[in-house]
Length: 168
Image (cartoon, rainbow, N blue to C red; front, side, top):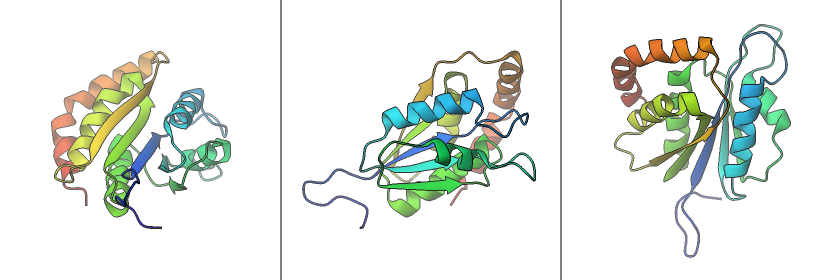
């Protein structure tokens, strides 16, 4: 089945759920579970889904794997990106997948405290593609650690946006 627009058919959408882990467990972290639940509310049966996140230890399953095990919503296809280690890695994988699939819309699913930065990087990674990025967020509170990390990441955002824009 090809992507694109056929008569009477909607354009291809990619729903990308960004993983989250605190390295402390082999189970799906509650933040990641909230993102997964939001992704399942956003997906349509004709959408392609990308679950993104790496394994933080040798014996542990990747965040993408844990999300795939818990995924229950109907979708055209579910793709796992087990190698994304950061927000930049997440959005680079999202951009590559969207370009290959011919997606005209990406629904980027993440936490509210992370959504603005992730959305900016995703838009930079998709620059020139005509792909629309919509950020769908959860509403859990950020921990102090997450807030401090976000603050630090904003300091280097211009450099990361340039790197993201070079994603192909």
